[in-house]
Length: 106
Ligand SMILES: [Zn+2]
Image 1 (cartoon, protein in one colour):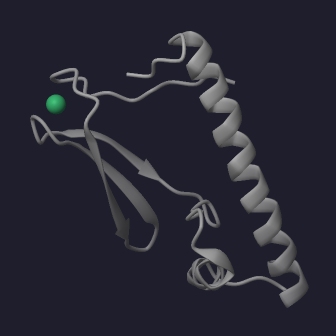
Image 2 (cartoon, helix red, strand yellow; image 1 turned 90 degrees about the vertical axis):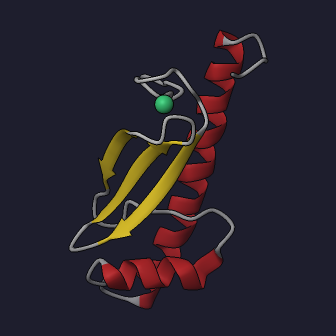
C-alpha cells in the first residue's frame, strides 16, 4: 500500500478544495485554494463514495444512484462493511503519515 499526502504540483500548497461532480459517473475535482489551478481528478467506482457520519440514508441514496442492490439485508451489511473499511483505511493511513512526519503532518 502506498500512502501520500496530496499537494499542489504547481505551487506546493496543501490547501486544497474537493469539488464533487455527479454526472454519469461521480468525480472529485481537486482545486488548489492558493493558485486556484486543477490539482487532480478522481473518477469514483460504482459504490466508491462514502460520506463519513452521514448515516444509512445518505448511503442508501448513493447506492440507488449507482443502480441499486439485490436486497435490503445486503444494503445494511454493505453499509456497515463500507463504514468500517473507510474508518480502518483512514486510521491506518494516518498512522503511516504520523510516523513519516513525526506526528507533525503538513
Ligand atoms: Zn497551487
